[in-house]
Image: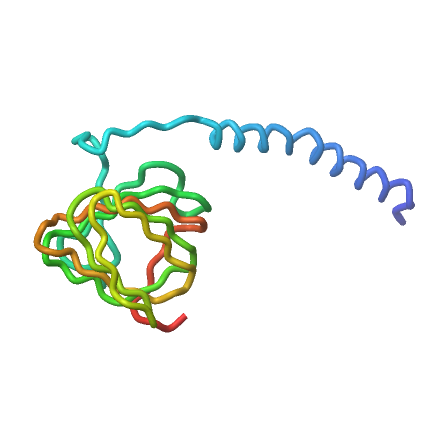
Amino acid sequence: MKSSNSDKWNGWFLISLIFILVCPSVIAQSEASANHSVAVDLNNTNLEWGGCPEFMPEGCNIAVLHGDPATNNADILFKVPAKSDIPEHWHNSAERMVLISGSMEVTYEGEKATVLNPGSYAYGPAKKPHKARCLDSGPCVLFIAFEGPVDAFAGNKH
């Protein structure tokens, strides 16, 4: 039996109706999550610290403060021991950083090294290779807000 144009329209109508009914609830859930406030005590021993990519120095740890690292707009803490060298790497996302503790020397490709002290702010453009060193006053703890998903790739090729 051949389907008529009205059968096709009924199918499209049903799909459209489902879309109209389901999408607002998905959007509302997403907005509710985005609008939920978060307050974290950085001295809280309940922070869940995980490992860093393999190319990062031994003792490197990351804790997620807010968001999902696999999606846009996640906030993390990045911690490395004193005298650690963070090798050249890059991210697909821009990153906004504030050094919480320690002193860190950061060098972006083609730029002079900058020393960050507690309270210092730094912005790193997406895909711009950079390296760092946690100086003697470590450990260095860095707050990082990623615009895109959290990632890190060794080297300067992107």
